Every structure is written in structure tokens, then in C-alpha cells.
Length: 341
Image (cartoon, rainbow, N blue to C red; front, side, top):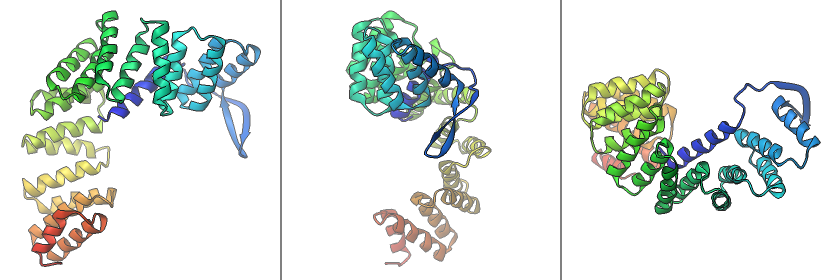
């Protein structure tokens, strides 16, 4: 999983921890913005009213900033947190909140400064330490990230997220054994840790370790419609030449999602392994329909047509490859074989 996506997911989840989980009701009051009538949520109306009565209440400003963080209204949240910190600059949690806002706004330098301030005010602030570790991981300062994580584990030896973050650092450092060990500890502490099971599947699959199957299945159990988890399992089966299970697994995705990579991999299996060329063409064509710029799918379909003896269709697909990517050498080679310059 992409590192930035993981960190973004963690930031948003932090926001949800501090925000009301109740369903928002819409107020009948409205405000006009660029001639568009916009309903103001009841929760925000109440916060605005309280702050209007108590403009110097830093906790109220912080509460509204958390609301803006959850809604990803970054600038409004930052303004509230700057006001809150001008009133009270002694609360470590305030700096964590503004760091989350800065991070979402791609202001990683300011996020780092805010987190370091949070830790200086409260060296036992686990949330601040973990977020600092995430930020260091994001900028590939792995030693500093692991150092922050170890501080967390000295405070809480059962912290699943800390073990997960340590595993992500070891993965980036290409120490697969330690990465797997850390992820395994993470799921021991939290058996509902989807991201850790996913990483275990990825790490084991890279080593052709059959444990990848169970880890992917655990991830699927936690998220039955996770394309990445089902695809990962299917790809493991494909890479280990268990084509029957690969096809069964990939087809599960197609029951609820049009995924171009799934169609492509099914097409490859039918082309190379089962020799079912019509099915191969069908799935390559589906991948192209989903993404008309999918160069590899045109090439695969071209090879399939060539295998069937359909020279004209093959030439058209290889030419389509070059129209999309003039440097696609495989297509050039096939065209030369077919006598096309």
C-alpha cells in the first residue's frame, strides 16, 4: 500500500476519534455562498454560537478545529488552531491537532515543528510521538521514526499501531524479516488490524511464503470487498502457478468491481496458461474499455490476435501501443516480425 495513503488514512482516523460520531442533522438556517444556498450543519451552528459567546475559550476553538479537520476544511481549522494557541500555548494536544491540519495541507515542515512542540510539552503524549514517527517515515527518516516509536513502546508495550509503524519502517529499509516480525506483533495486539494483515500478505507474497494466503484472507475477512486484498491473494496464486485459484479469486473481484488490472491478469492466464484465446481477448478488451490508454492491454490483446493468426487485428493493437507510447519496444519488435515498418 502506498505510504502516503496509509498516513492520510491514519490522520483522518485521528480526526474521527475527537469528533462526534452522531449523524449530523441539517439546520433549516442557510447561508448564501456564490449564489448557492448551503445548509449549515447543526453541530457547526452550535459551535459557532458558543464561540460567539466565549471568543477567548481556546477549548471551544480547538473543538471547532477538530470539526474542520474531520471535514477536511483545512484552512478554517488552521485559523481556529492559531487563535486557540494564541490564547493558550501550553496544551500538547493543540499542537497535535494543528500538525494534522498542516499535514493534510501538505505543509510537512510546519507539521513537524508542531509535533516537536507537542512532545516538548508532554513527552508522554503517545499520539504526538506516533504522529511524529509517521511524519519521519513519510520523509524517509527511518532512524528518527523508529526512535519515536520506541519511546511509545516504553510507555505502552502493547500499542499495535507502534508495531505497525515500526514494520513500515523496516519494510522501507528492506529488512523483510524485521518488518514481518513487527507486523505479526501488531496483529497479536489487535486482531482487527486490516492494514497490518495487508502488509503481512504483501511481505510474505514477495518471498513466495505460503503464509501470504492466510494473511490476505484475514484482511478479506475484515474487509470482504477490498479489491487490494482480493487482488493480492489472486496475484499470489498466479505468481505461484496456482492458476485455478487465481482465476477463482480474481473473478470474485469482478462480482462487485470493474478493475482493469484484474481483467488484465485473467487475460494473461487465459493467453499463457489455459490457451483460451477468446476469453483472453474478452478480458483484454474489458481492460481497454475501462482504460483506453492501457498500453499493456493493447499489447497483450495484440499478442493474442497474433497467436490466433489474425494479423490485421494484431497490427492494429501494436500500432495502438505506439500511438500511446512511441517508445514501447515490445510493440516495435512484434510489428517488425509482422513485416510492418
